[in-house]
Amino acid sequence: MTVFIEAAIKVAVAFVFIMLTTLVLVWAERKWVSDLQNRIGPDRAGPFGILQTLADGLKAFFKESIRPTQSIYLLYLVAPIAALIPALLIFLVIPIGAPIEIGGTTYTLQVMDLNIGLLYVLAVSSLAVYAITLAGWSSGSKYPLLGAVRASAQMISYEAAMGLALVPVVLLTSTTSIAGIVDAQQGTFGSFIPAWNIVLIPSFIIFLIAGFAETNRPPFDLVEAESEIVGYHTEYSGFAFALFFLAEYINVFNMSALTVTLFLGGWAGPVPSFLPTWIQWLVPVFWFLLKTWAFVFLFVWVRATLPRMRYDKLMTFGWKRLIPVSLAWIILCAVAIGFREFGAPWS
Image (cartoon, rainbow, N blue to C red):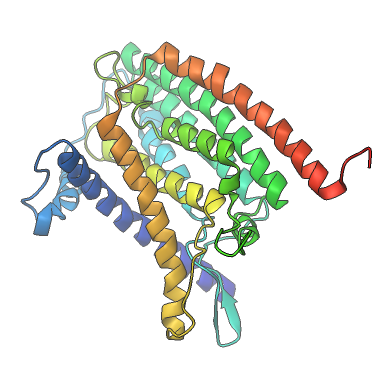
């Protein structure tokens, strides 16, 4: 019973945390993009417009949803939910801080620590393709269907590159547990250089690029290329459209958090020993959020800077550039790690 209560509390806290984070993220993106493009951005609802996202969410919740008469009713309703659930599930395996000990019991700042956490993330993230396909097909219109087919092809191609980019991480850390990967990055190579997986620079770059494509962010936002083709969620309005919108921004935060966790040590960072115990518990959370929000800003910066790619260029880049480079890098890493573990075969 105690385990069940602990799990329920963790799930509730994680849900509230990711919802509040998404509200702040949407507001922050609008303000950052407005600053980068010399505009004002939201400044009416609340201090600095910080309540604008909440106001937009409430408006979408009470707005009438218009359903196409030719749509497939059940699948049309399920698609937005199917897009949101994987985004929420991915966050459950990301550790946002170091384990803490209270009364002789150790509590992890992670809803669940799976020994196959990395495979779980890849499996759950791939489910989002089904939501996009269902949304386009069930709308009963050929234009959302075409947009869904194009979006599905994009996501599948860059999922392959993303999965291959993570193979060297598993080879280096010898675990697929996300908490284990963070633990493997503790310590230093020298006096000041953290032992982070950022040494796998090609994997880091490939994973980050694939993350932009997976979250449908510029310059890979072909999913919502209004000037070229109608997107998969064109026939959605009101709360149903808000679920797609919410899932996209949760995925942006998840991708930033995963990049930090897998390559930049996660919550690892200096913790002054003279601080009170409860503050020492919060410092790793601070390092995790600082690193994650730095990558969130990178997502926003790229959106405000780079133009959209042409679709054939996008697919060519994924299949003929990222995937071959990923395969070559896996071979090099396997050989290097083999030499480190077993020595040269001729010695």
